[in-house]
Image (cartoon, rainbow over the protein chains, first blue to last red):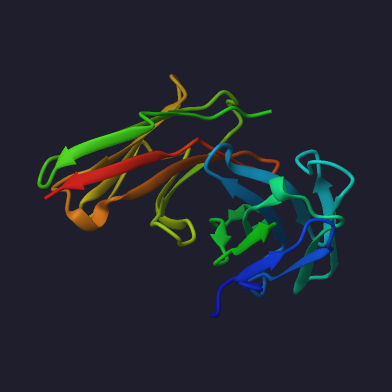
Length: 116
Length: 111
């Protein structure tokens, strides 16, 4: 199993530009999570999907952030326009929840975003 | 929603000593408690987990205990080694499938 795959690993962009982060969850997992990690705020949940449907997006900072999950094997997190305060490591994670079964959360390697 | 608190935020121990990290949670419906280790520049990785029908679980030098009545759970690392140095996160998972994380403990093992 290749695990959760994120791309790109690093992204450096200028303020105002659009940024798109990508994630491929573990095959068979039905829940996908986007987290942001900074020294100041730790691990913050931005949004999570269950069976490709957004369940809780209350952690999305503002309208500049949007996330989609068009199918079970792909999700994107978009920031438009980006700002320096968006600089952080963004993790995608996936898990499985079914009738009487629950798997741990598996994280991807993250995308380190720097907005100058 | 769930609220997970984690203590201490930093911990230094001598190599060979034990380390204990404690977490409390607020939602009695939470029933799954994983622990993650994050090394510098890397992703959080699961090291051990416990479900609410179990009071204790061990895996070599690592153990986790759960007290459902008091709503707290702890990570115990015995015979610590320098490679145990990392940030450790506890988490609580409820029936809604969301994972709520503690704020992390930075563990330093001094050789």
